[in-house]
Length: 294
Ligand code: G1P
Image 1 (cartoon, rainbow, N blue to C red):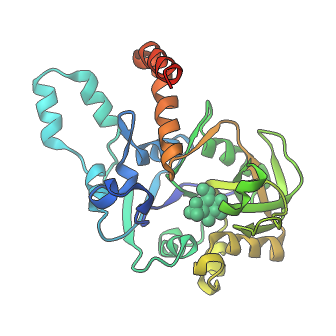
Image 2 (cartoon, rainbow, N blue to C red; image 1 turned 45 degrees about the horizontal axis):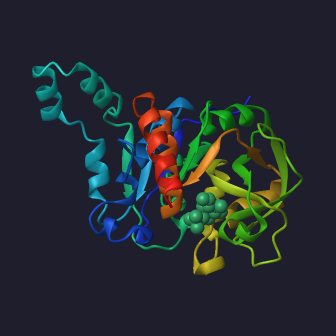
Image 3 (cartoon, protein in one colour; image 1 turned 135 degrees about the vertical axis):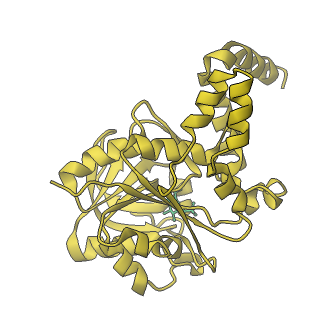
């Protein structure tokens, strides 16, 4: 029986330069997909997987993110007075109970591995999840929940995995493993962060959901800078493969949108918009008409 995963780290310290000028004043994670900030999707997914303690690794200029999670008492009172119960309910669903959410600042942009390491005191000796809110995964069963269930059998470390086109492997952590069927996990023989063209061990890429052993924090403590001069989370997990052979890739069911890119964000906006019954007909007619006119 594995120890329950109740803590999640959300690394959100990035400057969001791909979304300039918008990110001059809004943290990327607050940018809106239909009517909810990106980060709300990750929070909802984490809650559905049984996460109760949330830690955001943030940076200077990200205070709007912490404000978003504050309870909006005035707004709640105003909605109550106006009898807007549905809106009030929606707002209440986003409330985080005091003490369940914490923030730590990453003082230097030294990479994802360093951001995760900044949360070491929050983790102590427990397994933990890491969620990259840029990766939005649309799935009937939330991705992290699928992983928590699979992890109950495997233990060790688990990373979400998905096949990507060969010419895209250089943008991801890539697994050295056999092919896996959707909805199953596969043993990882090695991992390499952003392999150079022609050197990727497979086309199975790591997507931003991880369940990690607290030992990864120890590896991060000693981890030297890797590709791009950054301390890479992938390199620390690769140490677990070498030392304990206890890493699995989980091929999740669902569609992943890379909301760290403009095209991914636009696609996600259309997909999540079409999913909403109140927009479906009008939006699909509009998209069709607009595309035909091109
Ligand atoms: C990060 C990880 C990479 C992973 C990717 C998934 O890269 O370092 O291993 O494949 O997220 O989105 P980034 O996109 O931050 O460059």
